[in-house]
Length: 119
Image 1 (cartoon, helix red, strand yellow):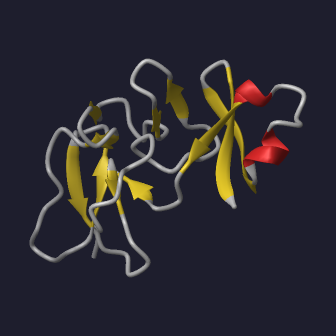
Image 2 (image 1 turned 135 degrees about the vertical axis):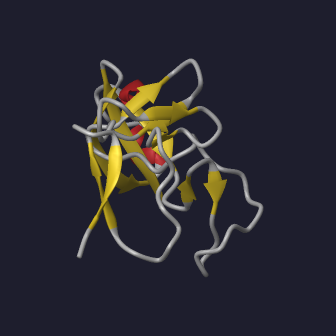
Image 3 (image 1 turned 180 degrees about the horizontal axis):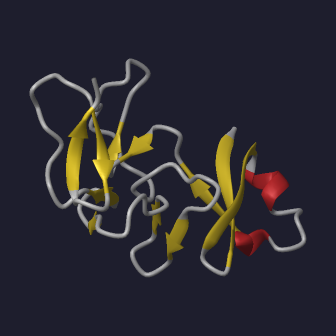
């Protein structure tokens, strides 16, 4: 079985597990684009959750509401905040300020464009 995302007007509407033969029987098979459960951030991961050097399919596993960029042939997640920027190497959104690496937990504060410590 493979995974397929139904894309209508560039937006993922549904994701299913199916065989290509089933997709070919649907009324609009061209709306269905294969996606890989093992692809995140333009990296392919193995069963152990580690990068395995495999081919990353369309940058990210599609999710409902994701955008499909047909020119780049990638799935792009929903933008979490207006200030975040799209990294066109990973096809993931990144905050304008890197997440702190001190081991504490933070949430993004869009009003101040900063990471706020969670106590």
